[in-house]
Image 1 (cartoon, helix red, strand yellow):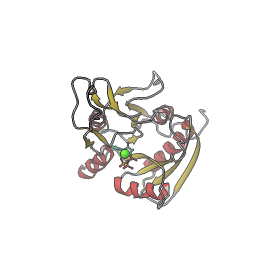
Image 2 (cartoon, helix red, strand yellow):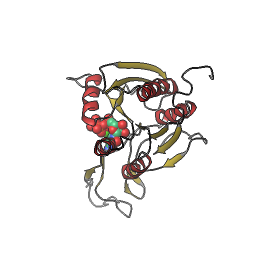
Image 3 (cartoon, helix red, strand yellow):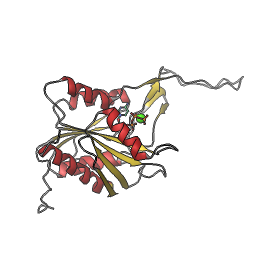
Image 4 (tube, protein in one colour):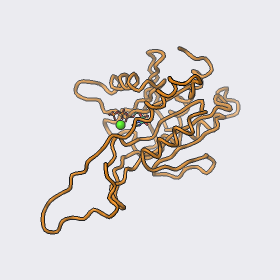
Length: 238
Ligand code: CTP
Ligand code: CA
């Protein structure tokens, strides 16, 4: 509401948000994809805009309509996403990487549809190559430049945890490895988070050991995350 003291917490801030899942093409009709619905990234864009930000959404494949009032660039592959992030985040205050970027893409794109061999039971082996780590590259670029932009870089991580490690300790390690300022960690061990309207996130910060746990609709958790980011922008910890 307009009486909410936080309602314009991002007034005039330039915010770049990625959303959805990339698709890495194999042939004209097939791709490697993932289960990201794009709902969390789109909710972040809507809430940031409501908080007064100038939002640019870089949107890969999503299951829902993108609100018409959000300035959006559509992409498909991880490499396309990387190009847009590199360009649009150059003069952004905040970058939020909510997109699910494929870690690997097929080495080759087959110009013609891959066919079964009618005479044998053979199956092809698909060779993969690593996609660039976009988040990591933007962090490194910021370290190398005088102009420290984006001032806040936020990553997302969906973790299941393992026999040895909880999803949160994996998140801590990932925050350090990526070098981003905040990491929003999502426990997906029971498929929670994918495609649903609600989410449970723990926000980790590189500046302290605080763990902000939030649960609610994707809009509610978006506003928690964006408030933590706005707070850091106005009173940076180092
Ligand atoms: N990310 C990215 N570029 C990639 C892969 C991931 O920018 N090629 C970003 C995601 O958008 C997300 C963050 O990195 O904000 C964490 O993604 P995640 O898949 O959890 O991390 P990975 O480093 O790929 O580790 P994992 O092996 O667990 O998938
Ligand atoms: Ca990954």
